[in-house]
Length: 142
Image 1 (cartoon, one colour):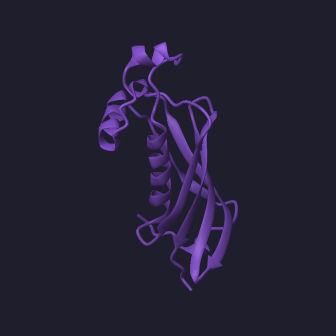
Image 2 (cartoon, rainbow, N blue to C red; image 1 turned 180 degrees about the vertical axis):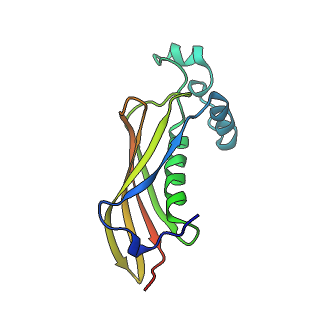
Image 3 (tube, one colour; image 1 turned 90 degrees about the horizontal axis):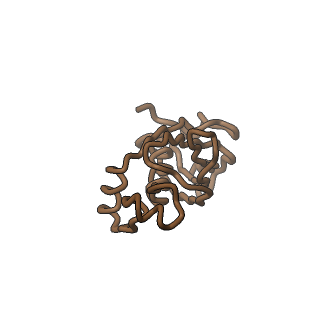
């Protein structure tokens, strides 16, 4: 993986997108890993009884994918300093989700080269189902 440097990014630079297609099996594995056993994530009939069209992807899993988007982008020497996520819609297993980001601010704070990014998730219809903000620290060439 190529290392990203502070000097490589400017406001408006795009974060390399990440595409995921979560499966029902992945939702069950995630539930076991984090202890989120809400049946809306694995039991289709239960989810429908709650007014959903089927099981839904856990919000925390979507947030974890946003974290992966950023850590994949910033390289081994970069640091993910802050990540926030706000959910705006449902995601479903089998659906193609594209995780995207754009640089909104570059600044130096306490000698650290910081980059703030706006993040979002798009479903296959192009709808934004989650958004967030990340702050990363990148190495400098200077």
